[in-house]
Length: 380
Image 1 (spheres, rainbow, N blue to C red):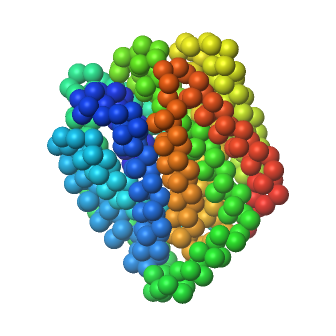
Image 2: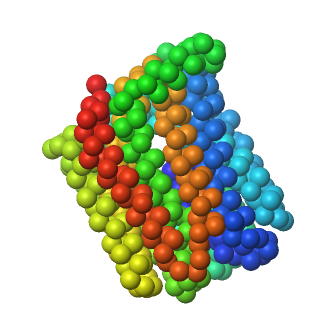
Protein backbone atom coordinates (compact mmCIF):
# COMPACT_ATOMS: atom_id res chain seq x y z
CA UNK A 1 0.00 0.00 0.00
CA UNK A 2 2.96 2.37 0.20
CA UNK A 3 2.83 2.88 -3.56
CA UNK A 4 -0.66 4.50 -3.69
CA UNK A 5 0.23 6.45 -0.55
CA UNK A 6 3.29 7.83 -2.34
CA UNK A 7 1.38 8.74 -5.50
CA UNK A 8 -2.31 9.27 -4.73
CA UNK A 9 -2.01 11.19 -1.47
CA UNK A 10 -0.02 14.02 -3.03
CA UNK A 11 -1.96 14.24 -6.32
CA UNK A 12 -4.43 16.88 -5.05
CA UNK A 13 -1.41 19.01 -4.11
CA UNK A 14 0.16 19.14 -7.61
CA UNK A 15 -1.41 22.44 -8.71
CA UNK A 16 -0.48 24.03 -5.37
CA UNK A 17 3.09 22.72 -5.64
CA UNK A 18 3.35 24.14 -9.15
CA UNK A 19 2.14 27.54 -7.99
CA UNK A 20 4.14 27.88 -4.75
CA UNK A 21 7.43 26.62 -6.19
CA UNK A 22 6.95 28.60 -9.45
CA UNK A 23 7.47 25.45 -11.51
CA UNK A 24 6.66 24.67 -15.11
CA UNK A 25 4.13 21.98 -15.98
CA UNK A 26 6.92 19.69 -17.19
CA UNK A 27 8.95 20.13 -13.99
CA UNK A 28 5.86 19.51 -11.86
CA UNK A 29 5.08 16.31 -13.77
CA UNK A 30 8.69 15.27 -13.20
CA UNK A 31 7.95 14.90 -9.46
CA UNK A 32 5.83 11.90 -10.48
CA UNK A 33 7.77 10.66 -13.49
CA UNK A 34 11.16 10.74 -11.73
CA UNK A 35 9.66 8.88 -8.79
CA UNK A 36 8.50 6.10 -11.11
CA UNK A 37 11.80 5.85 -13.01
CA UNK A 38 13.75 5.61 -9.74
CA UNK A 39 11.18 3.06 -8.61
CA UNK A 40 11.96 0.96 -11.67
CA UNK A 41 15.74 1.03 -11.37
CA UNK A 42 15.55 0.52 -7.62
CA UNK A 43 13.73 -2.75 -8.11
CA UNK A 44 16.55 -4.12 -10.26
CA UNK A 45 18.80 -3.81 -7.21
CA UNK A 46 16.30 -4.61 -4.44
CA UNK A 47 15.10 -7.87 -5.99
CA UNK A 48 18.47 -9.67 -6.08
CA UNK A 49 19.46 -8.16 -2.71
CA UNK A 50 16.27 -9.59 -1.18
CA UNK A 51 17.05 -13.00 -2.70
CA UNK A 52 20.56 -12.83 -1.20
CA UNK A 53 19.99 -11.40 2.29
CA UNK A 54 16.29 -12.02 2.91
CA UNK A 55 13.10 -9.98 2.83
CA UNK A 56 13.19 -8.35 6.27
CA UNK A 57 16.58 -6.57 5.97
CA UNK A 58 15.52 -4.95 2.69
CA UNK A 59 12.15 -3.90 4.09
CA UNK A 60 13.62 -2.39 7.26
CA UNK A 61 16.43 -0.47 5.55
CA UNK A 62 14.36 0.90 2.67
CA UNK A 63 11.47 1.93 4.92
CA UNK A 64 13.87 3.83 7.20
CA UNK A 65 15.37 5.81 4.31
CA UNK A 66 11.92 6.35 2.78
CA UNK A 67 10.79 7.88 6.08
CA UNK A 68 13.71 10.33 6.06
CA UNK A 69 13.03 11.26 2.44
CA UNK A 70 9.37 11.95 3.19
CA UNK A 71 10.34 14.29 6.01
CA UNK A 72 12.81 16.03 3.69
CA UNK A 73 10.00 16.69 1.18
CA UNK A 74 8.27 18.83 3.79
CA UNK A 75 11.25 21.22 3.73
CA UNK A 76 11.73 21.44 -0.06
CA UNK A 77 12.09 25.05 -1.22
CA UNK A 78 12.38 24.42 -4.97
CA UNK A 79 10.93 22.05 -7.51
CA UNK A 80 14.43 20.65 -8.14
CA UNK A 81 14.81 19.75 -4.46
CA UNK A 82 11.40 18.11 -4.45
CA UNK A 83 12.25 16.06 -7.55
CA UNK A 84 15.45 14.88 -5.86
CA UNK A 85 13.54 13.82 -2.75
CA UNK A 86 10.99 12.01 -4.90
CA UNK A 87 13.83 10.09 -6.57
CA UNK A 88 14.98 8.87 -3.15
CA UNK A 89 11.38 7.95 -2.31
CA UNK A 90 11.14 6.00 -5.56
CA UNK A 91 14.32 4.00 -4.97
CA UNK A 92 13.33 3.07 -1.43
CA UNK A 93 9.70 2.40 -2.34
CA UNK A 94 11.09 -0.09 -4.85
CA UNK A 95 12.58 -2.17 -2.06
CA UNK A 96 9.26 -2.29 -0.22
CA UNK A 97 7.11 -3.19 -3.21
CA UNK A 98 9.40 -5.74 -4.85
CA UNK A 99 9.81 -7.59 -1.54
CA UNK A 100 6.04 -7.63 -0.98
CA UNK A 101 5.50 -9.25 -4.39
CA UNK A 102 8.32 -11.75 -3.85
CA UNK A 103 6.89 -12.70 -0.44
CA UNK A 104 3.66 -13.79 -2.10
CA UNK A 105 5.67 -16.21 -4.24
CA UNK A 106 7.62 -17.35 -1.15
CA UNK A 107 4.42 -18.44 0.55
CA UNK A 108 2.00 -19.50 -2.21
CA UNK A 109 1.89 -21.49 -5.42
CA UNK A 110 0.95 -19.42 -8.50
CA UNK A 111 -2.74 -20.41 -8.67
CA UNK A 112 -3.21 -19.59 -4.98
CA UNK A 113 -0.91 -16.58 -5.24
CA UNK A 114 -3.30 -14.89 -7.70
CA UNK A 115 -6.10 -15.09 -5.14
CA UNK A 116 -3.83 -13.83 -2.37
CA UNK A 117 -2.54 -11.01 -4.57
CA UNK A 118 -6.13 -10.05 -5.33
CA UNK A 119 -6.83 -9.91 -1.59
CA UNK A 120 -3.79 -7.69 -1.21
CA UNK A 121 -5.00 -5.52 -4.09
CA UNK A 122 -8.32 -5.13 -2.27
CA UNK A 123 -6.46 -3.79 0.75
CA UNK A 124 -4.45 -1.57 -1.57
CA UNK A 125 -7.76 -0.36 -3.01
CA UNK A 126 -8.92 0.76 0.42
CA UNK A 127 -5.68 2.72 0.81
CA UNK A 128 -6.14 4.20 -2.67
CA UNK A 129 -9.66 5.29 -1.69
CA UNK A 130 -8.57 7.09 1.47
CA UNK A 131 -5.31 8.59 0.16
CA UNK A 132 -6.79 11.20 -2.25
CA UNK A 133 -9.52 12.08 0.25
CA UNK A 134 -6.91 12.74 2.92
CA UNK A 135 -4.64 14.51 0.43
CA UNK A 136 -7.45 16.76 -0.80
CA UNK A 137 -8.47 17.71 2.74
CA UNK A 138 -4.89 18.41 3.84
CA UNK A 139 -4.13 20.48 0.74
CA UNK A 140 -7.31 22.51 1.09
CA UNK A 141 -7.00 23.18 4.82
CA UNK A 142 -3.34 22.96 5.82
CA UNK A 143 -1.26 23.26 2.64
CA UNK A 144 0.56 20.78 0.44
CA UNK A 145 3.51 20.23 2.80
CA UNK A 146 1.27 18.50 5.32
CA UNK A 147 0.62 15.81 2.70
CA UNK A 148 4.22 14.68 3.07
CA UNK A 149 3.94 14.76 6.85
CA UNK A 150 1.06 12.30 6.49
CA UNK A 151 3.17 10.12 4.17
CA UNK A 152 5.99 10.12 6.73
CA UNK A 153 3.64 9.06 9.53
CA UNK A 154 2.31 6.19 7.42
CA UNK A 155 5.88 5.10 6.62
CA UNK A 156 6.73 5.18 10.32
CA UNK A 157 3.72 3.01 11.18
CA UNK A 158 4.69 0.54 8.43
CA UNK A 159 8.28 0.40 9.65
CA UNK A 160 7.16 -0.34 13.22
CA UNK A 161 4.81 -3.06 11.99
CA UNK A 162 7.48 -4.76 9.89
CA UNK A 163 10.03 -4.54 12.71
CA UNK A 164 7.72 -6.01 15.34
CA UNK A 165 5.31 -8.32 13.53
CA UNK A 166 6.46 -9.46 10.09
CA UNK A 167 8.54 -12.67 9.90
CA UNK A 168 11.13 -13.61 7.31
CA UNK A 169 9.46 -15.58 4.49
CA UNK A 170 12.28 -16.67 2.19
CA UNK A 171 12.92 -20.38 2.67
CA UNK A 172 16.44 -20.48 1.31
CA UNK A 173 18.58 -17.44 0.65
CA UNK A 174 20.60 -17.47 -2.53
CA UNK A 175 24.26 -16.70 -1.63
CA UNK A 176 25.08 -16.18 -5.33
CA UNK A 177 22.14 -13.89 -6.12
CA UNK A 178 24.40 -10.84 -6.46
CA UNK A 179 27.23 -12.53 -8.38
CA UNK A 180 27.29 -11.18 -11.94
CA UNK A 181 27.20 -14.60 -13.62
CA UNK A 182 24.21 -16.07 -11.73
CA UNK A 183 22.44 -12.70 -11.78
CA UNK A 184 22.72 -12.41 -15.55
CA UNK A 185 21.65 -16.03 -15.88
CA UNK A 186 18.58 -15.32 -13.73
CA UNK A 187 17.74 -12.28 -15.84
CA UNK A 188 18.11 -14.35 -19.01
CA UNK A 189 15.85 -17.08 -17.62
CA UNK A 190 13.15 -14.56 -16.80
CA UNK A 191 13.47 -12.36 -19.86
CA UNK A 192 13.35 -15.26 -22.34
CA UNK A 193 10.11 -16.62 -20.86
CA UNK A 194 7.03 -15.92 -23.02
CA UNK A 195 4.91 -16.31 -19.89
CA UNK A 196 6.81 -13.45 -18.25
CA UNK A 197 6.38 -11.33 -21.40
CA UNK A 198 2.64 -11.90 -21.36
CA UNK A 199 1.94 -11.06 -17.73
CA UNK A 200 4.55 -8.32 -17.28
CA UNK A 201 3.35 -6.69 -20.51
CA UNK A 202 -0.24 -6.80 -19.30
CA UNK A 203 0.71 -5.28 -15.94
CA UNK A 204 2.73 -2.51 -17.58
CA UNK A 205 0.03 -1.69 -20.14
CA UNK A 206 -2.82 -1.46 -17.66
CA UNK A 207 -0.72 0.64 -15.29
CA UNK A 208 0.34 2.85 -18.19
CA UNK A 209 -3.27 3.86 -18.78
CA UNK A 210 -3.81 4.33 -15.07
CA UNK A 211 -0.67 6.48 -14.79
CA UNK A 212 -2.03 8.86 -17.43
CA UNK A 213 -4.97 9.37 -15.10
CA UNK A 214 -2.84 9.67 -11.95
CA UNK A 215 -0.41 12.16 -13.45
CA UNK A 216 -2.89 14.27 -15.38
CA UNK A 217 -6.21 14.12 -13.56
CA UNK A 218 -5.45 16.79 -10.94
CA UNK A 219 -4.82 19.39 -13.64
CA UNK A 220 -7.78 18.29 -15.75
CA UNK A 221 -10.27 18.05 -12.90
CA UNK A 222 -9.08 21.15 -11.03
CA UNK A 223 -7.83 23.55 -13.71
CA UNK A 224 -9.93 22.51 -16.72
CA UNK A 225 -13.15 21.33 -15.06
CA UNK A 226 -13.01 23.60 -12.01
CA UNK A 227 -13.06 21.20 -9.05
CA UNK A 228 -11.41 22.19 -5.79
CA UNK A 229 -8.91 19.91 -4.01
CA UNK A 230 -11.50 18.25 -1.78
CA UNK A 231 -13.91 17.44 -4.63
CA UNK A 232 -11.02 16.23 -6.76
CA UNK A 233 -10.14 13.85 -3.93
CA UNK A 234 -13.70 12.51 -4.07
CA UNK A 235 -13.44 11.99 -7.84
CA UNK A 236 -10.18 10.09 -7.41
CA UNK A 237 -11.73 8.13 -4.56
CA UNK A 238 -14.59 6.93 -6.79
CA UNK A 239 -12.07 5.44 -9.21
CA UNK A 240 -10.46 3.56 -6.34
CA UNK A 241 -13.86 2.24 -5.22
CA UNK A 242 -14.40 0.83 -8.71
CA UNK A 243 -10.90 -0.67 -8.64
CA UNK A 244 -11.72 -2.28 -5.28
CA UNK A 245 -14.89 -3.78 -6.75
CA UNK A 246 -12.79 -5.14 -9.61
CA UNK A 247 -10.54 -7.01 -7.17
CA UNK A 248 -13.56 -8.69 -5.58
CA UNK A 249 -14.94 -9.77 -8.96
CA UNK A 250 -11.45 -10.91 -9.93
CA UNK A 251 -11.48 -13.53 -7.19
CA UNK A 252 -14.78 -14.93 -8.45
CA UNK A 253 -13.47 -15.04 -12.01
CA UNK A 254 -10.28 -16.77 -10.88
CA UNK A 255 -12.26 -19.64 -9.37
CA UNK A 256 -14.46 -20.06 -12.43
CA UNK A 257 -12.18 -19.16 -15.34
CA UNK A 258 -8.55 -19.10 -14.16
CA UNK A 259 -6.14 -16.22 -14.59
CA UNK A 260 -6.25 -16.04 -18.39
CA UNK A 261 -10.05 -16.20 -18.41
CA UNK A 262 -10.28 -13.49 -15.76
CA UNK A 263 -8.19 -10.97 -17.65
CA UNK A 264 -9.98 -11.81 -20.91
CA UNK A 265 -13.25 -10.69 -19.32
CA UNK A 266 -11.77 -7.67 -17.56
CA UNK A 267 -10.28 -6.40 -20.82
CA UNK A 268 -13.76 -5.65 -22.13
CA UNK A 269 -14.36 -3.17 -19.31
CA UNK A 270 -10.91 -1.65 -19.82
CA UNK A 271 -11.43 -1.12 -23.54
CA UNK A 272 -14.95 0.26 -23.14
CA UNK A 273 -13.76 2.76 -20.55
CA UNK A 274 -10.82 4.01 -22.58
CA UNK A 275 -12.58 4.29 -25.92
CA UNK A 276 -15.69 5.95 -24.49
CA UNK A 277 -13.57 8.58 -22.73
CA UNK A 278 -11.69 9.30 -25.96
CA UNK A 279 -14.92 9.53 -27.96
CA UNK A 280 -16.47 12.01 -25.54
CA UNK A 281 -13.31 14.14 -25.52
CA UNK A 282 -13.10 14.10 -29.32
CA UNK A 283 -16.74 15.25 -29.45
CA UNK A 284 -15.86 18.24 -27.27
CA UNK A 285 -17.69 17.04 -24.15
CA UNK A 286 -15.69 18.61 -21.31
CA UNK A 287 -17.56 17.68 -18.15
CA UNK A 288 -16.65 15.83 -14.96
CA UNK A 289 -18.90 12.92 -15.86
CA UNK A 290 -17.27 12.47 -19.27
CA UNK A 291 -14.03 11.61 -17.47
CA UNK A 292 -15.39 10.08 -14.29
CA UNK A 293 -17.72 7.38 -15.66
CA UNK A 294 -15.32 5.94 -18.29
CA UNK A 295 -12.54 5.94 -15.71
CA UNK A 296 -14.72 3.84 -13.40
CA UNK A 297 -14.87 1.17 -16.13
CA UNK A 298 -11.11 1.32 -16.69
CA UNK A 299 -10.39 1.08 -12.96
CA UNK A 300 -12.73 -1.90 -12.62
CA UNK A 301 -10.76 -3.85 -15.22
CA UNK A 302 -7.48 -2.74 -13.67
CA UNK A 303 -8.47 -4.54 -10.45
CA UNK A 304 -8.15 -7.86 -12.30
CA UNK A 305 -5.27 -7.06 -14.63
CA UNK A 306 -2.89 -5.85 -11.96
CA UNK A 307 -3.48 -8.72 -9.53
CA UNK A 308 -3.11 -11.38 -12.23
CA UNK A 309 -0.29 -9.60 -14.04
CA UNK A 310 1.90 -9.26 -10.96
CA UNK A 311 1.29 -12.86 -9.92
CA UNK A 312 1.73 -14.33 -13.38
CA UNK A 313 5.03 -12.50 -13.95
CA UNK A 314 6.71 -14.15 -10.93
CA UNK A 315 4.78 -17.43 -10.89
CA UNK A 316 7.15 -19.52 -13.07
CA UNK A 317 10.23 -18.49 -11.05
CA UNK A 318 10.12 -19.73 -7.45
CA UNK A 319 13.92 -19.54 -7.16
CA UNK A 320 14.18 -16.11 -8.79
CA UNK A 321 11.04 -14.46 -7.43
CA UNK A 322 12.89 -11.30 -6.44
CA UNK A 323 14.50 -10.95 -9.86
CA UNK A 324 11.23 -11.61 -11.70
CA UNK A 325 9.30 -9.13 -9.54
CA UNK A 326 12.06 -6.56 -10.06
CA UNK A 327 12.10 -6.91 -13.85
CA UNK A 328 8.32 -6.74 -14.08
CA UNK A 329 8.30 -3.65 -11.88
CA UNK A 330 11.10 -2.06 -13.89
CA UNK A 331 9.14 -2.47 -17.13
CA UNK A 332 6.06 -0.94 -15.51
CA UNK A 333 8.02 2.02 -14.16
CA UNK A 334 9.82 2.76 -17.43
CA UNK A 335 6.50 2.80 -19.29
CA UNK A 336 5.10 5.20 -16.67
CA UNK A 337 8.17 7.47 -16.88
CA UNK A 338 7.89 8.01 -20.63
CA UNK A 339 4.14 8.52 -20.34
CA UNK A 340 4.81 11.19 -17.72
CA UNK A 341 7.30 12.93 -20.01
CA UNK A 342 4.77 12.95 -22.84
CA UNK A 343 1.93 14.12 -20.62
CA UNK A 344 3.93 17.07 -19.26
CA UNK A 345 4.19 18.37 -22.83
CA UNK A 346 0.75 17.29 -24.07
CA UNK A 347 -1.58 18.81 -21.46
CA UNK A 348 -3.21 21.70 -23.29
CA UNK A 349 -6.07 22.97 -21.15
CA UNK A 350 -8.57 20.40 -22.49
CA UNK A 351 -9.51 16.84 -21.53
CA UNK A 352 -8.23 15.37 -24.79
CA UNK A 353 -4.61 14.44 -23.88
CA UNK A 354 -5.81 12.64 -20.74
CA UNK A 355 -8.59 10.83 -22.58
CA UNK A 356 -6.47 9.81 -25.55
CA UNK A 357 -3.67 8.55 -23.31
CA UNK A 358 -6.05 6.37 -21.29
CA UNK A 359 -7.64 5.10 -24.51
CA UNK A 360 -4.22 4.07 -25.85
CA UNK A 361 -3.53 2.18 -22.62
CA UNK A 362 -6.88 0.42 -22.86
CA UNK A 363 -6.26 -0.73 -26.43
CA UNK A 364 -2.80 -2.14 -25.65
CA UNK A 365 -4.08 -3.82 -22.47
CA UNK A 366 -6.97 -5.47 -24.28
CA UNK A 367 -4.77 -6.68 -27.13
CA UNK A 368 -2.31 -8.30 -24.72
CA UNK A 369 -5.12 -9.83 -22.63
CA UNK A 370 -6.86 -11.30 -25.67
CA UNK A 371 -3.77 -12.55 -27.52
CA UNK A 372 -0.44 -12.97 -25.73
CA UNK A 373 -1.90 -13.93 -22.34
CA UNK A 374 -4.22 -16.50 -23.93
CA UNK A 375 -1.31 -18.14 -25.76
CA UNK A 376 1.43 -17.97 -23.15
CA UNK A 377 -0.23 -17.11 -19.85
CA UNK A 378 -0.30 -20.60 -18.36
CA UNK A 379 1.66 -20.56 -15.06
CA UNK A 380 2.84 -23.89 -13.62
